[in-house]
Length: 503
Image (cartoon, rainbow, N blue to C red; front, side):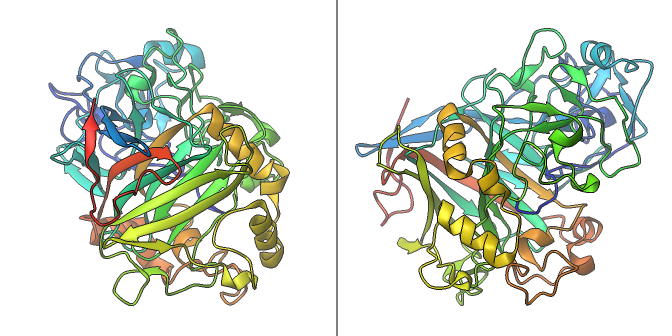
């Protein structure tokens, strides 16, 4: 997220040993099943419990099915896939005893040493619907993520899922000179929440190594993003024990997990943005010190990743009536819509450099082109290009770390290598999602160009504590995910659903 927090999670649940069914938190594995998770800025929020790296034996891991359509000019073919819950949400234990206690502290009995902790503790399977509020639709081509799920041992807040193409591997999407389409319904997401869809350069096998990490992608390991989150409990086969700060919210360790990120859709019913975040290194960087670019240390623009990114948020770009809930808006978020993102190259070939990231919508059978960036003046365009990003940074007086980290060319190289698709729902304990839907930074006047990002008032009504009490039924639905050649995913705009072959 541009100037955003880190997609994290939080848990709410007591530390008790798992019972017969344990799915990390409510419902299946007792309290244990809830691990203190670290999610980029995504919060699932169950009572934190750690994320171990060995596969558990107490709760079977059964991935919810999710069909993905691959499209060409000849049509779309639906291929069987699935989703898996991030490992940070799961119960971590040794023989039924928690490896992470008191909601925020490693148990020295099992985790006095980083390598030994990862080899000793096991991460359990998940009860997706009962504990985490994740359900598939009847056609297995969509998932709904619920905000608050009440279980036997506590409440879960949000979730983070990865798309798989097998039981043990993530689906690696290669999007340069391709388009990505999906149907979204954010009508039940108020200010302060974020139903996010994005790609990160995780390892296809979740950094499985058979030793410190024997769980792998099957259990949702290996997360990283451009914010270099420090709340990831296990990285590269070791626990993040060094300098563990249990009083931070969420708890954090010495190391961060950095990698390139492409935010396709960060949104609620009031605002939306899409944002590329290139990094200077390939894949996951287990960072420490200045490489992490920690904002709290004044090193945000000295790290390996572009944390701000180059965002296109229609409200921030001056078009305040483009996206919102109701018929007064061009794109009406009170109804489902199809969101299409095209990754165009300089010469229209797969080998060309990424030169433009274009967005359009389809709603009620009509194609809706993206809004213009009117706040930047004439001819600023309606898509993300290097020229747009430079003009935006200059106009808003922002540091141009996007160009410094290689801009669209660097982002295109990541898209060529392949990225993992993330589906999530979270609230923001850091800055209450103000960077997405309100005025941010808060110490700048709201009428300064670039500060106003959405119509939300901010304040207590966007704080996680308030949201969890007042809008627990909030949810988001993602469905009809398609990837294909340019122009292939919405060939039949008249009908909402294209006919597909199945394999």
